[in-house]
Length: 447
Image (cartoon, rainbow, N blue to C red):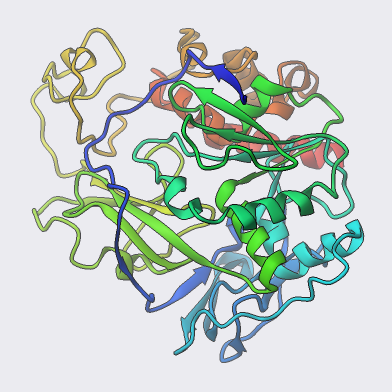
């Protein structure tokens, strides 16, 4: 029987607009895009130009430091544009799908019992770049041997998509992926699941049941409660949908870049799942499904805590298979503002009536308060189920004190682990941004 871990700290944010577990339709997007900024740790060097024809699996760019690390096209089609920003920074590569968008480049899967050939398969297919390593939450460097590999089998974030719908019936692919990943580590492959998951009894992996509120589904939280990352340790992380893609590659020699995207939020007319292609344009996925109520909308690629605010002219960002639409709030006038005692206002504070209700809320994107100096309130510890002193870690990051950062657990965390801390923070600090900058700083200093 799988081991169970009960997490008491955390917070489930109740938002109206959850997607029922059924697919609404299949959509071939008007365009798809790959954004290099989504692949932390990679410095991109482009391999295509406008007008080139590509297949799903064709290389778009590679890493300058590790040229074997490649990011590939999710769709067969034609390169429409290579968009650059200031100082010629590569911002995105846009692909127009062909009449056969799922046509994939074929990869040689023979000889993958050898770890070197297995690594080559993942690198050439681009699925290597879909994994992350702790510390630093970056794409793993080729040739590294992880202490363990952590697979997150569910998402606990607000309005999170249900992985079970995508994974059900793919046990053979998942077993094949676990066999392949087992060649990279002498440690354990852990799969964190909810009770009743279809991922129980996976050969070669240890399944761990996690009970409790968000952030129970975060890889960093699961690792910290199984075997924390210490200085010198390397742990790879990936989600179960990526695990399934690896298995499909092993079994067929082709990439499956289809994705079930949850379109959610209180400003969505009909929440549900759309089957489409990774990197699809937001306009294709939301067309006709956002309320026309004269409200400014915030469209988020991802969830309300960690996602990227995007417009209709943008794209589904990696690694999200989730779109959330909520009111922006900049056109909303409210009596007493953030201090309003309306029971319809969502709050974690007992000072507000909304704290005591079990109803679903429709929050907007306002911060509801002013930014101020850091307040040592102890609130971070109530929503972060890790054995670290979160407030002191943030202060060490701000002061760029590497010794203190190491002592306080910088190698265990990623920005997403502090998303709830940012939500409850009375100081309104951008904790995820602070932590990301701290991780990049310490990585550069130690290299």
